[in-house]
Length: 293
View 1 (cartoon, one colour):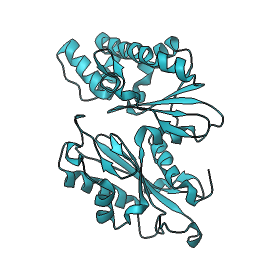
View 2 (tube, rainbow, N blue to C red):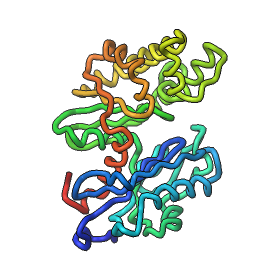
View 3 (tube, one colour):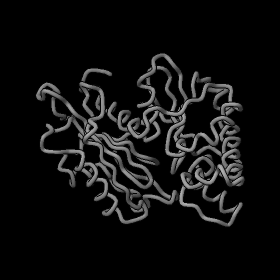
């Protein structure tokens, strides 16, 4: 791979991004300081149900917003991307998940290369859950961690004390469906509508109702029971020292974390880095080009 040599710049940066179901966050990451450059953080919201061109235009708007003429050329572009996705080839295979249908079969690496003017070999992809957990555990050493991401989808990754890998628990069976259908935003919206006949826009709105609305509180408790029941056999098999919960649903963790901790035989923490975690984890793709963290 023909990357820019680290020695040609006084500082080295990676342009890093996290792609979610309805937004993209991007920033420049200073690999020498080992941190995101705060004033380069950009966030763009969009519909993942629109055309491929509109989706890619939104991504590039965000990425280019993080990049300014005052910065040297980045070592590369690191992207935390949901699956199914061929991370080596850069091809999207998302289908039947109510998002990114227009990108199915598209070589995202080539598409972004043309729009950004970046050689395709300098654009790398990593699973979004794997990136998030890798970012969170970068502060830990010698600790075995199971991490899950709770948002528009359900992601999971395992840190063995040295490396982080995606374990894709979201595709595993749970009750009458798969885990992704139970531990994502759409489950909360569906469950609340089933119980009340009222539609809410997201978990944030449901959390705002929880103090005064018994049904909302019951739904959060049901979520904790479902999640603990699902995770128990994997905790028994993998024997992690720590379970880390990440993703936007954890912003409402006050309504389910206590119940979850009571039911699980492992220490449970909420991720500390928020949206910075996947940005930091994705950058590890370029770690061979600079001093290790």
